[in-house]
Length: 427
Image (cartoon, rainbow, N blue to C red; front, side, top):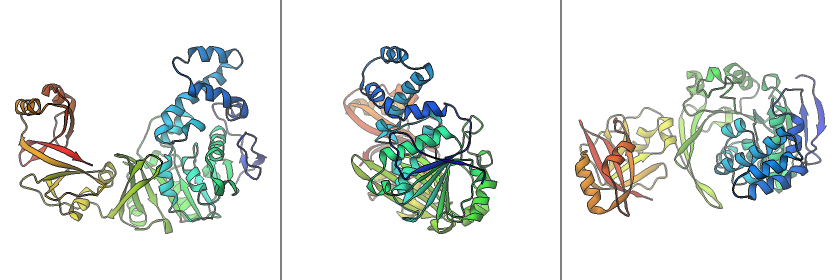
């Protein structure tokens, strides 16, 4: 490990026992400006911006009288980033972000779900921690060492942990290292979590070879400590040896697949299998969690007609390639080979499947549909398509919808022709 210096954290959220070690890593914005941003002077300024209404121009002009252009820019940017971060962090109004780190940050609901796999009350390394989405959740289970090569980023992660830390986390000694993961050993940690940079070249990539750090570093980490987890883009393909050794999990929240995680060592509950996990968030309550592990590539039977219900797997199930296995588990048949719309005559209460109760099945004909929806006063229509070239926005325009009623229109192949399935969403 290279020479480092140790210094006590000096922002307003500092814990006396918490330290970070830093290397002279170049960063933008400047570390002095970040220290000012997370310090006591800016608290009232940010509160004023966050609670204000209307144009920010007058506020910016007022700030420019007392602060440098760069610090005014940081304040205004922080105001906008907090607004964008609400979906990921309910407490975003008290946190600090950078644009690139917010985009890749694990939201707090997914982070807390993931953290449950890690050993409690043992030190875990969060590598390439960014602004600390996973660090916050891991710190609720035990002491952490958060690592990022950028000093400004590690300062924000430290500040965010202090802001959101619960009583148990505050009594633990957490460490923050501004170091390159390439120089770090994980042999002394109980487990590690890695979130590689997927935009190192300036554009988002799903290619593992283009991640920073890449496969060679991950292999080294696994040799030093087998208990590891690697956060990946949902579409990232892993080497066959990793797929056999690890458990691959695709995690979705509120109908979006958020990330793929490769679990290694004792963190892998079902090595060699794929897992899809779906979180449904509820205000002021823990998320509802549904999870399913199986082998990919299962092909269910094909229906010769539409049943009483049509079901669509969650995005995480589709990304994991487990739609066929999930359909087989519930005794469902596919509407068309290779198309993830399934049907059956029994209502399925599974949060991994969106369930639609069928009211009408007819050939896809715009005139007939227009007449049907006009007769029923349908003005709000959810249009879903799979395996066909029709675009929902073009279909909607042609239907000329009017009225207060609502419905769902599913367009899919049944046999050789496109079929229109009118339904209602079962919640």
